[in-house]
Image (cartoon, rainbow, N blue to C red; front, side, top):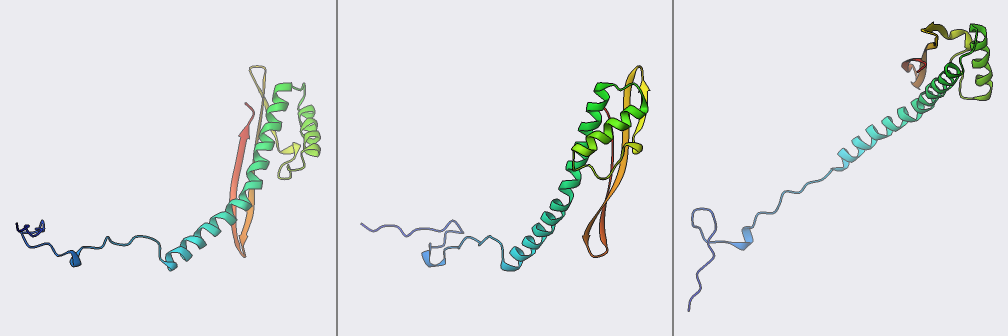
Length: 136
C-alpha cells in the first residue's frame, strides 16, 4: 500500500520538511543591552540621590504631625518643640522652626511647611524638588 505524500497547507503543494520556517528569533541585541543598561544605571543614580531627600520630607511630616497632636499653647512653643525634634532627628537639615507657618483652625493647630531641595546630578545639572506639607 502506498502512503500519500504529506500536503502543505499552501495550495496543495507537497510538504518539504527541509523548507520548514524557522521561528523568528527574538531577544535583545548587544547594543540594545548596553543602551538599556545605561538607562537603568542613570535611573538608579537619580533614585539614590533623591531617596534621602524623600526620607527627610517624611521625617519632617511625622514630626509636624506629632507636634500638632500635642497641641502646644503658643507659636514659640511649637517652634521650640520642632527645634528639639530637629536635634534628635539628624536627617532634618532643610528646614528650621522659623520656616513653619502656624495657625489655628477651629481650635485645632495647623502647621504648614514648604521648602525647595536642589540635588546635584552631574556637573551643572540639578534636580529641583519642591516639598510642601501640612499637619493632619
